[in-house]
Image 1: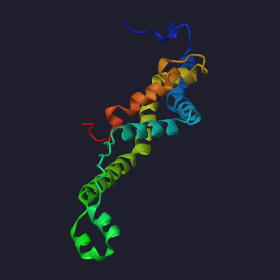
Image 2: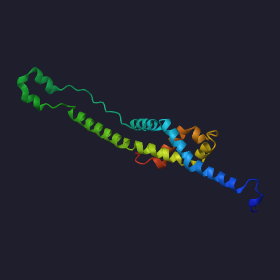
Image 3: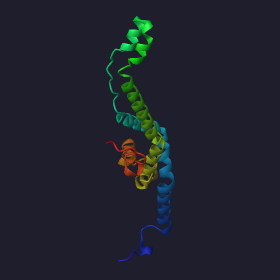
Length: 175
């Protein structure tokens, strides 16, 4: 059964105006309101803090190196004339401290490398959130009288977008 346009209770101009208003709400005012409210809510700072905490949680704990006495240093402090013998007695923990120092430097480099993509991931989350045009259009088109859940729980929706596969680029495996 087809719809007979002349028998509709509203005119064609009203239908066209409603469709135009819906399109403007979906493609212009909805994303604009979303970007302004995201900027006002300090999302970038919250996102970067959250990602930094997540990255720091993956940091491996420092290895505790026992503090063994340096026999060569102790011997030389008491008997300075035994300098040659002191040089032959190595510090037993020097190699372990050097390995731990290199390991810590590699860990810091890994965290720096992962942290470089934080801003891109936060921006991606905003873009994914803005793709929910129906909720944003309903919010903008109603003059902010109707607030869908995606708009009401913006932080949750942004976090969900941040952790979605489309915004997980450059992310290391947590294992």
